[in-house]
Figure (cartoon, rainbow, N blue to C red):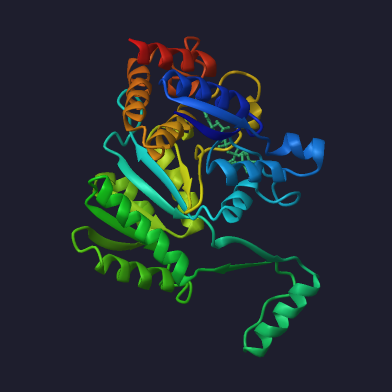
Length: 359
Ligand code: NAD
């Protein structure tokens, strides 16, 4: 049986990473029919939209996608393709395993935790009011009626957190813990300051935890969690948190396991799942056949597992781990120095993984 999967190469270094990943996925022996679809700055320049309808339609049809990174202009310009994608397909759970592999230079070799980031609400809902806009004037009026004040030189971003959104992400974290033999779920929040948004997240997390007494539960204020993750990473198992915190802690986790080139991810909803690395498009390396495809390949491992191809997932993960541990055919970021002349390129790393799977 062949799986139809939407393949979104993305932009910047995305197409090189997607091609390397496509090759190793095919080398597992699992058959794919790729529906290749555009997203990002390149298609924006051609068609005036960074996320054409046909890409979304394909994902709605195939229900499974693997995506290279896409660039988001900072401050102005179009909104993030990723935020749009997660909202349109209701991909509410962003799952990001942070596991240190043997052979990687890291101060945290014991790291093995999984981040569950709420993906559709919180600070990323995109409700913003520019200085001087009519919307902002109305916001200011409402707030004034309630006895508070927003200074006139403010930009305003709204955040909301729902009971429903909190319940399904925390429940997903507990289900994952059960299915993967994990012992503890930690909920991270800032409910001491944001009592009515993060407060809901924490209340709901406690209620969901009560339904799963076999899994240990604790909560941490987000700043304390960051401290603890780098002090005692071995104490963390599954960590669940609202959107912005999850985004930031994902990069912290990536740093702990040896860099962004190694950090995979999955965006999972009820109707579809899209697999992508934690890192961005690293545009300065575009077209250089230089960056590490491990993060997207490991996202491919998560995709295989999601498709029920557990054996292929294990073989691919083992082959990637073996190439990393041997250390000779790895990209620049996994070498002792960034200008190591023995570093291989993106496609040669893929060749090494394919060779390892065949041996
Ligand atoms: P980035 O993750 O693209 O790159 C930061 C640095 O990390 C790079 O300069 C490089 O040194 C290193 N790096 C990243 N990926 C690597 C890899 N595979 N191998 C080796 N080293 C790697 O972050 P940024 O520069 O902040 O963002 C660039 C663009 O990507 C922005 O437009 C941002 O919005 C976008 N972005 C997209 C996604 C996504 O598509 N899911 C995620 C994050 C950022």
